[in-house]
Image (cartoon, rainbow, N blue to C red; front, side, top):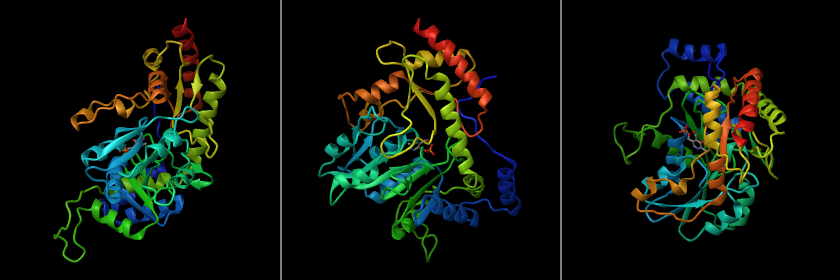
Amino acid sequence: MMIPVNSPDVNQADIERVAEDLRLGRLSGSTVTITGLELALAAHVGTAHAVAVANGSCALDLACEVAGVGPGDEVVLPTLTIVSCLAPILRRGARPVFVDASPSDWNMDLDQVVSSVGPRTRAIIAVHTYGLGLDIPTLRERLGERPPYIIEDAAEALGVFVRNRPCGSLGDVAIHSFYANKVITGGEGGALTLEDYETAEDLRALRNLDFGAIERFRHERAAWNFRMSSLQGALIHSQLDRIQMFLEHRRQVGLRYREQLSHLPGLEFQPLTNSVSENGHWVVAVTTGANTGVTGEMMRSRLAEEGIETRALFAPLHRQPVLARFGFSDQETRPVAESLYARGLYLPCGNGISFDSVDKVCSAVDRVYYEVFS
Ligand SMILES: Cc1ncc(COP(=O)(O)O)c(C=O)c1O
């Protein structure tokens, strides 16, 4: 049997919470289940408001909307991340400005972010990459009196802290994802967390087709149906109740991999810490040594033959073919992100992975590593 790249943990309590909504006929996206999740998530992250939506990608769309991103604007973002950060920029006729990863923690390089900001910069998408916090407080300080709107992407970093402040509370607005491989999941799902009441109300209207407050079927804007269903909300809330246990399990899994594989020459793990944050072990990402000629893809295909599913790291966004469709071409190299992509992969993990499976993966990596290198 294949060891999957992600093993979720769904227990009887989760099933009961979803069953309860099914029994009560609480199905839509406008129920007390959703309100309850929003209150719990806001309390967990330490913000005044949370707005539940269908997934993290549409949360990014809404974040760009409230940031006012439009034609001619520039938006700064990391190149080593998911396309969900890029697509809303392109769809709005704005220009993406890509920042390379820092070799020290794989997050966006802050010096490059600061030098990429100019008079046209409307927003920065500040991603906590692979669960290690980005120093958003310092970024803010360095940007001076009138910083661009900061969209914090905490999709990979729920439960992680930056300078003792929770990820999800550091941007003007923050987005979350509850996709199946995230720290807590509803299968699919997303949310925005923020302080500002007016923006939160705006987000609630925008996710809900901008139904009129007085006359329901009277619409001022062309909005979306980005609602989260109650069934997703029930599962996510139940999972949020166990988040500390999940985070501890992920930490133990991450450390176990490190203990067992750190002797392999050239195999490098994503850093455990940077100066402001400790890794939440969203995934266990490794790279083969630079200049060894061994690619992440070589490791991945040999591990697949051993019954181990892995995943590539994000392909840098500045190289994506979709850019040409919007009239952009970016020939500049981003050497760190390109090298991480070429050499990287992540290993099986998740809230439900057993230590036995971790040990099996480690033995296979050990075998395959020497074989591929020789
Ligand atoms: C950094 C980041 N942002 C956004 C998303 C998008 O979330 P979703 O898959 O819920 O659309 C993801 C991952 O899935 C992600 O890793």
